Length: 89
Image (cartoon, rainbow, N blue to C red; front, side):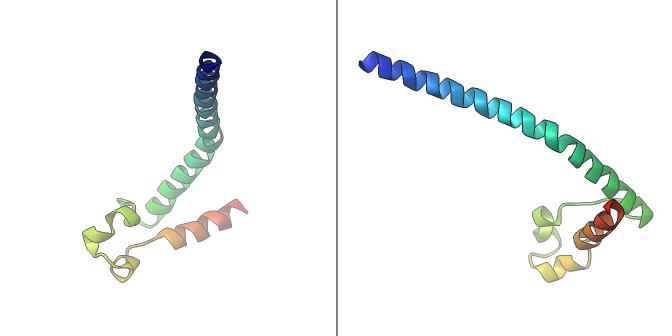
């Protein structure tokens, strides 16, 4: 009985691992075209505005100042989102 329970636990663990792998692969398949579209749109957005480099301000906020006010002047997130949504309608 105990051996059967251990065997079932192992089988469940294996199925969970397989499911996570399949799920992860499917998520990548689905999101890859969206991510690519956003990347290309962001590159075009930056080029049109003469922006040479885009950084993730949420990860680098303390590089220019640790408060939102310090990063607000260089944050183009909302402007990009508005432009992207306008072009995709």
